[in-house]
Amino acid sequence: MSQTVSALLQLRDLILSGELAPGQRLQELAVVDRLGVSRTPVRAALARLQEEGLVEAIPSGGYAVRAFSEQEVNEAIELRGVLEGLAARLAAEKGASPERLAPLKACLAEIDAVVGAPRLTEADFERYVELNARFHEQLVALADSPMLAQQIARAYALPFASPSGFVMVQAMQPQARHILSVAQDQHRCVVEAIENREGARAESIMREHARLARRNLELAMRDQDALRQVRGAALIAPRRA
Image 1 (cartoon, one colour):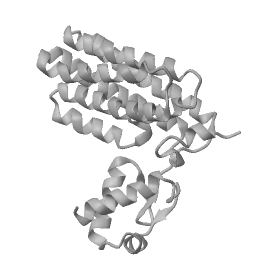
Image 2: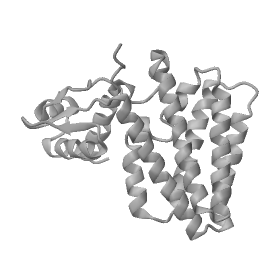
Image 3: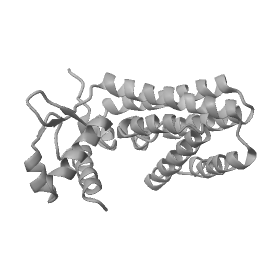
Image 4: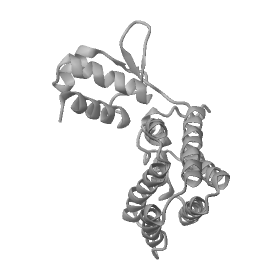
């Protein structure tokens, strides 16, 4: 692993875990000492984290860890829905062969097995997160648009805006199975729309699908124990009383 990649992964983890708090200034030399790498990879890692939205440049020089309001998180989720909706529409309009749709359908079947379990355990939710991420990645790939895939990857870089950002919150909610069932039905409907080359329908479904994450955000903001299940939750500013 290169020093730049190592610095990026370590810094990202420190930020998302809350060890580097929102608003905290990141002094280049202090980061170098903490990570044990040279200044050049640290500088490159900080620039990449600025692109991802996790840090911001400050007027006096250097960077600081970003904080996000609830509205900004909602907007990030909405943006992800818009981009994924475009991916679904392009996939439908370009047409997807049965061979290319087969992995998506296989993923649907695996998710069905998880959602249909007699009792949902934490392991089931972790498995759902893995399968859900795979489904979204496969759907984006069907669009055959490297430029769009790049923009979606940037949207996913904010963990609470990613497709599985708030899934673990559901594990603590009594309506967990219902929400997962709704999400899975939307997965199935978008695959059907792509298969039938219904671009507008596919786009609409994926945009609505992202709104489930906004509902989960609302649940999490009312329950700090649930919010702690969200990767990067330390960056989300608490509601004012």
